[in-house]
Length: 356
Image 1: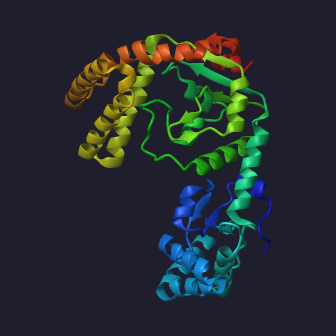
Image 2: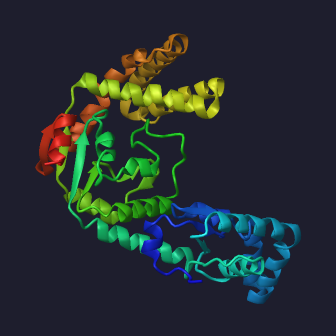
Image 3: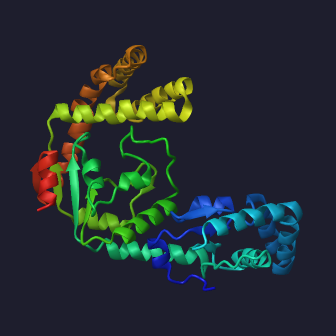
């Protein structure tokens, strides 16, 4: 049985990882292929930590064994055993490859299951992931720019050398960008990005022209530095084509997503709240009078959609929002990068240019 030290191979292969850290640690940062089956829950870990500070390591270890004993121990051991048998190619992992993963490994062995662990634990995987990102972003990079609704994300996702940063962040970048999947912690976002770069290992990267932040996640500094220096291909599709894409993505698909996840009644309420929140988030930039006008138009459009199923009434507020806010803002930002623009064309033109 060999403990894991080839961290890059483990990450690149999506090798199953049974992470035995407490839930709060897992939420702060984890790897894409990891599942959390903790040795101690958050309260137990906190109690052991306090004991360690006051009475030392031996007392803390003894307390840990008392807290995780009897039925609690049996239940957790069965969960690890089941996971190990289901994923025989995996590894155990704790914070630094210390006592927790070794204790779980020993308990499993006594129960008849030999299972390796990640030497040096999550910390080593995390360091390997960060180094991968630093190395991979040195490769040539092309950014895809364009106003909202240009299909930039679709272009990126269709390419073998494309990295969908918004997909990894579970956010589409704008005030209406949230999805039903909660955003990851910053460390987890960075880990997921690193693993995606490692698995694709392309000769160059195609990325969407993003700002520093995607929702609550920020891009790693090394990636941001590369993007600032990179050439930009700008998608310039007709306004009507962009409108249709936005209608499909933000109204049709989001309503279906809310309905599927929450049910008809609760889903409708949350869908409406989602659209209202998107406007509310930019109220100061719109000005309060314009915000009030858009809000009234949104409420009318929601009434129409609920009554008839049609989403076209949303154009009454979406069109002026694009014309008066989003498009001027993006064009202003693009003007500041004018020397980086190397190509302009429709969605199909840019797709062809990337294939040249």
